[in-house]
Image 1 (cartoon, rainbow, N blue to C red):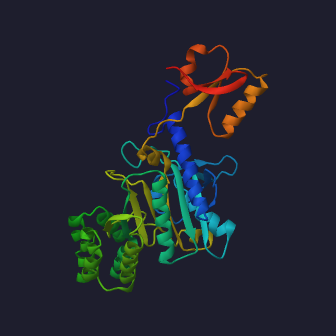
Image 2: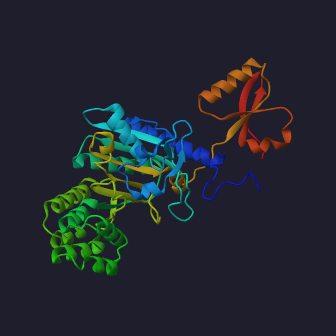
Length: 387
């Protein structure tokens, strides 16, 4: 057995890509910071109940589990950081007003979420707790679009849905338990034949509304079509009003590619608006988010919450590559005080200075330097390396 082979869909990040990812991580965290978001660092492992309570079956299937040798209890390796941040807000910070939090770290999935996607995303995200109005939805989506701009993502656009519409229809039709799960799968897959079969015993209004959802997909005109074709329930009126308001408020920062009223991603813990951001020509979302007002309930406080997350690996891959930063080669002369002052001054200006250790003259090109420090008339000066 080759001991250097990694598990499937797990891979190392090598220097050039690691440098791009780290620069991007710092830039996005700086963006979050100046908008008032405080950084938290949850642990990689928690008791399974804490990681999964209220998050639904999908996250359970994605979570690696192991037994704690100290307590004998079942632990989980986090597959998503959002439940952990909700726990911090509800149980540890315990603030009364609005709390803005951000985070970054590795998560681990039992299975990849798509072709050529890693099982170890590097997640980064931001969340607002304690505010139930559309203002926080607008703020979080604006922040997400600014993060994509920091990453220099080309042609970013939004897809927006609202799980409250499906919830209202199912509740009014009294389709709880297993029928609800089957309806959810059929609506999410836009499977009209399955939907017709599942709704044949429901009343006419519920049947027509549920089978209409997969077709309510497109531009702002979809909201008017939904208003005409869906029942006039208060919850549906509120959801459509929320989507109209978002369309108006985000017009200056985001192109809304479509409204999709059959988009139920994260249905088990999302409670309102759900959204995804795509790059121009990309089939997979670069950022996902939504409102999840009940996620903190398991920790004693069902605080209003909205947020988004992104995978730094995918974000860095979508970012146009600039020219790699090249370094300056310095000779090995630890007792030369003037040389050491020059090196320190260059590094203080964020220049990369690589000391050329003795015995490796033949491999200097591997250092990635395009300049060198040379002594001229008693001074150490930077000059270009000959190629």
